Image (cartoon, rainbow, N blue to C red; front, side, top):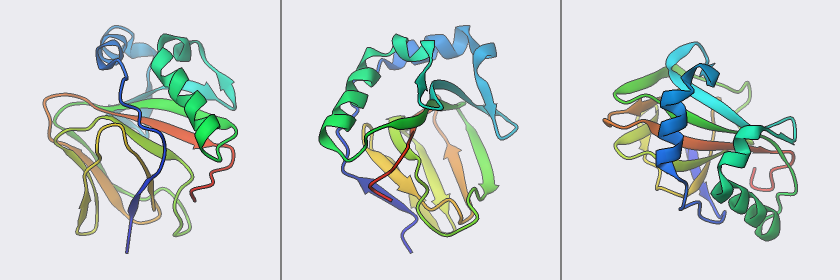
Length: 163
């Protein structure tokens, strides 16, 4: 079974990783803990279809959003956040959905070297700048073996033409 598929979105290849590191290190209290895992944090860029002030910090992500609207069937984004998993950490085995379909959230690799997503005996390694859909009904875990944070951009369109 395919648990992870790469989808044909424009590449996101110019994100200012140093800026994300800076904001993460200096404004850490403003980041949300994900699923009670202190090593896994996120900061919202779009919430309920509304841009947050954090999105203004990332002109390259704004340009990418415009290319999504122009070159894909995506017309509106409901939610978007930057997700950071601390170095040498993991998100333990879990499942997210109640049905075995591809989740509508699109994961885009920003900095994922030496990390992987694992379903049963299948390991998936993201390519930087590329986007993916996951079957999160199936138990999976995220491993970050790197000395650097694992950074992804998580985008949930109002209607996802790739699901």
